[in-house]
Amino acid sequence: MRPVYLDYAATTPVAAPVLAAMMDCLGTDGVFGNPGSASHEYGDCARSTVERARAQVAAAVGAEADEIVWTSGATEANNLALFGVTHYYAKRGKHMVTSRTEHKAVLDPCAELVRRGWRVTYLVPGAGGIVEPHQVAAALTPETVLVSIMHVNNEIGVVQDVAGIAQVCARQGAWLHVDAAQSMGKVAVDFARSGVDLMSFSAHKVYGPKGVGALCVSRRAGVQLAAQIFGVGQERGVRAGTLATHQVVGMGAAFELAQTLWIGELPRIKDLQQRLSQGLMALGGVLRNGDSQNSVPHLLNLSFEGVEGESLLAAVAPQIAVSTGSACMSANPEPSYVLRALGRDEQRAESSLRFSLGRFTTEAEIDVTVSVVKQAVLHLRRIGGAGILGA
Amino acid sequence: MNYNSLTRQYFELAPQVGVLEGSDTYRGAAGSRAHGTWVQFDLAVQQEEACAVVREARFLAYGCPYVIAAAAWIAKKAPGVQAGGALPASVLALQQRFEAPVEKLGRLLAVEDAWNDAMKMWRGSMRSRP
Image (cartoon, rainbow over all chains, first blue to last red; front, top):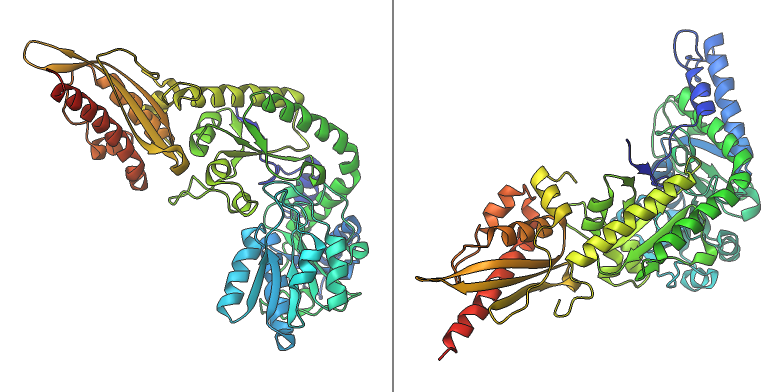
């Protein structure tokens, strides 16, 4: 039997209707033409299919279709946003603002910008993981070109007030990029109303295929990007390369489906998370990471006192698939930088597990998870001498 | 991470986990939980005709699966080992037996240090005997 899957924040299985839509693009009878071919029906058909998918994604995120730039995923979208904007507006100044709890797909481009002579201010969120708009305001200078703050944190599920941050940025004339890879299908996303200038999305977090994402670029704000990939000039010259029709069709279908289903799914996910949380908290010595009042119910990040992170993961892995908050699987074991940024000590950061729930999670799976984790924690605490005099 | 079957077995079953009490028991510990690895051995030593030997051993460990498995394995192999002697297997041999990545060597050293600490306690008690 396969382990219970509770790692939906890492990736999701492709939903059946999404798979069907993608299959229609493959094979000799499929929509296999090059969307860039303007001289025949195959190309026309592929192009209209791609544009329909673009419209689906735009409708799901509250954007206009011509604000969507296809990418290979959220990582490329983040890179395009950060390098595209900073390259284009470098003459305005060389300063950007981000937070210490961003995904590596933002932090690593920031590190590269520093190597290129930019100054980056890294905001430290409060203990719950929230970056307050006033923190952003205090960091802005006349030289600030770009602010990049994620919407839903991938480790702790905290939701940032991106609309509030957008107001602050607009007043100062800085562009705001938001990594929304974890947002779709979990919280309301309205690109136009949020006031955000650029927003990154990924398909595979939303029951779509891997290898496709999008960057929303606000037409209202008139934000410009310097191209980072050169070629035939697809995507209005911003991102060259033949579009993978079946992939973008998959993303369109997945986003449309998520937009239809997410509100209906929410109460069930909340109930499951509560069942999981209550079951595990009963162990004692269990601490929640992240502000529970401002989090999506799909993610639950817990630290377990008295157990070591790698051992905890090894003990539960045969039966449940979760992520550890620490990167202890790597050659150089380091606790989660996100939890460390929130002020958690090394031990608490290292002994955390991220449970991420999704569309196919069942109550029975939650009960198995509670049982397996409880057994593992008690076993490891006993081995570690918890409660034994002299240990 | 893929652990070999021996590591899985000793990590999951953790034979000999616990503590020993008694006047013939010597306790040694090394490492710290705050630094991610801590090991404790309790060794019960009995005097035989020619020499003193470990009669029984128990361990406690906080650390990665390799540390737990290695400490459990050592505690199981300890009975019959001459008191005052070195760890029944070297750290390098433990690393090979459990197929631990080389970067885990530092953590496995805590197993040896805890053993040596217990033996130091035994030697100390021998010196103080009338």
